[in-house]
Image 1: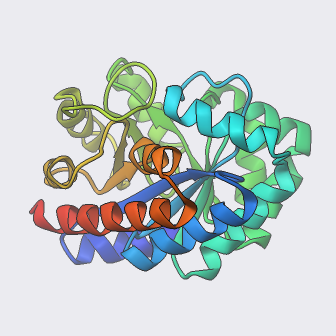
Image 2 (image 1 turned 135 degrees about the horizontal axis):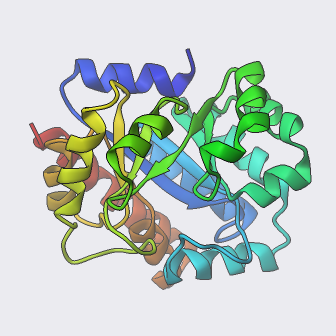
Image 3 (image 1 turned 180 degrees about the vertical axis):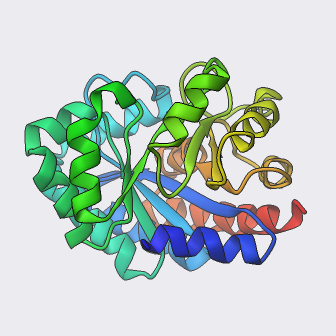
Length: 266
């Protein structure tokens, strides 16, 4: 059992959803990222996703792309991603890496999975990896005993939902709307329908991402999802902050609000 499995079991026993925060490695700087991770953990998030910054993302919206560009200009590499992962796991929260397939393949499939485990990580979210192309990855994650986390969307048909979730560990990442990541004024009604469809084919926890930025949105999602994923809202605060200290204060305040929200949902 990974730390993520334990966290998802714990929040289920508490009859609430988990709050999962996302931040790219190396953003706003290497030290700034470590401080942001600590601030989020101290504010009550249950798990942290470390993003592997990528130059040609297919799922990330403009806010995360801007953060990734800053990170890449700072020279962030795989070692920095694993270092950020260890910072997160050392705080006591569950932590995973979110990355496109190319960096995994370039680093070495078995080596990447083992490096996740060696740094206390629970798994990897791979938004552009299909299950048909996953044999090497599934073998590597099984050997390293980490969770392979796949993404499903409203466009995923029921038979494919069953196929994808049968290969998934930790939680199913449900993208609540079509398109790229980013904060939204409202969270798509597609999310509720998608979660219901996923529940029909798996007992795995289901975490919903794409769009959450307020306590009320977190509360509404937590009514039916097992995890609420928040990324762009935190990154936007760091991008807009007048200073590092004010940015850390802002994400801490939002995380505390969202932590209340996920507890109010049921």
